[in-house]
Length: 104
Image 1 (cartoon, rainbow, N blue to C red):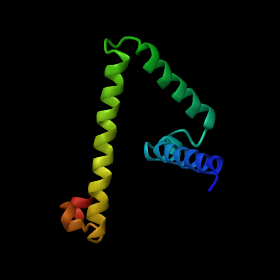
Image 2: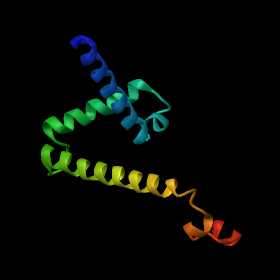
Image 3: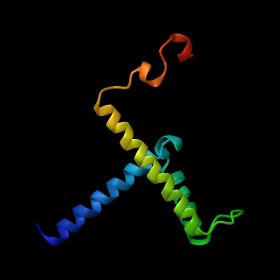
Image 4: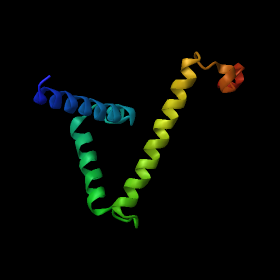
């Protein structure tokens, strides 16, 4: 494979993964798939990483560190859910919902 094709394939994969993160965060549904709204949110996020957040004493590095921890927890929760799903669907009993009254 030529170098340019390999580079293009790697870039495409990276962009697809980033799109998956947008979906995983729920931004597509929360914005009704409005690309301008999502871009505005991303620009605001980039500003926070450059200069911090107004009214927040944390540095941009501290904000990023907190976001990273939250993201890692979300990845861990997804991995745990996938492991559970490999063993079959989670039943109402396993969720602690055994009766109709508990479902309401």
